[in-house]
Image 1 (spheres, rainbow, N blue to C red):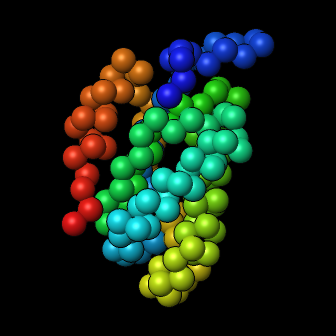
Image 2: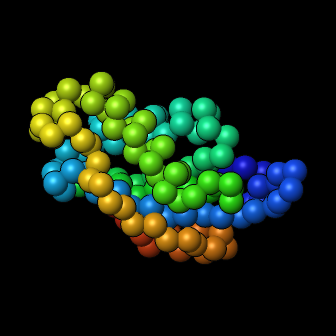
Length: 137
């Protein structure tokens, strides 16, 4: 978690927090506890590689994932989620061949996604009511 809720750049100061929901391809139930753990580790790597993506929370259900992401105004929500989805899909297929077998079409994620801009002071509302109650069974 960053020290400040604001991201300071040379020409702007921002506080953009996005709530993304990404369903798996065909809404197949492929997210197990091990896939969820791998997904979180992959996202840590994405955060290290791309300084404009900060994951605040990640919550997975069996057929979709919630990402609470902070970024800068230099990148559109589509660019952010495209980056996240492409890297996570490749890595999950490489680490979990059983998932690739279930999703025979070659895609891990569905083509669409949900995005909402949320205020940082209401981050706890998103975390407490939407992301944290999601439990894999």
